[in-house]
Image (cartoon, rainbow, N blue to C red):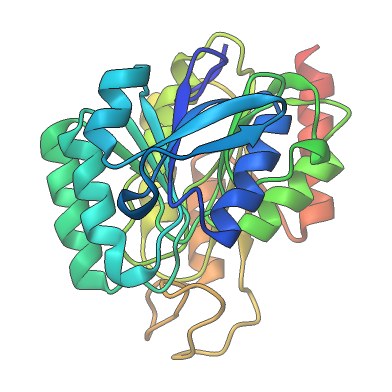
Length: 295
């Protein structure tokens, strides 16, 4: 099985006809994703050739959903248009909106996340690589060839780059689903949301959690793991050497005073029984050891 995204997911791309949207739409299609349409009001009525298929461009998300039955939207729009794009997807009944865009104002993110939750739409992101269920579907910018085969590991990560590295290092074991949730201060899907889904997924046998400095999401995830997760969890926290008060990489990756340090997050996770690696490569080794123990 998988979480959030399967071979039956019907995907549209808001902003498909732009340079980035087109590039990644072709990559998603080549990975087996069922791309059923694009959305661009200025180019409605056109078609785009994808793997010998003619994919229509619609003027609105509502029209795309009505015509194709789409239930997932991958969004490639500039930051000023992100709030409107997510709101339109939610109002059209899209169940999963994957927002790749970075640099979105926090005020806008708060507004569209609240609206999406009210409409029953799950948002992945913003500022994220999306998610992939190997062998089934790929929604976002994760290169499908990093880990081409399915397997028992479920991965949830704030960092796109570390998502790719752990996928590569554990490619021989394989993944059920890998979710890059994004590193902005306000995101739609949390570590806990993914932990809940992986715990319920019968084909996920081991979970990898990647966090980073800033905020308390990892500490809250540790409390949740201790109370609700029966499957083994291995983690990595980025940012042990980050200086206080300086944003590192993601907008939410900043240590302020004694809050949000990598050391504090590691202590919380280890107290919950999670094995925590000091480097991505060591984390991969711990995962392999844990997997051998399960077999």
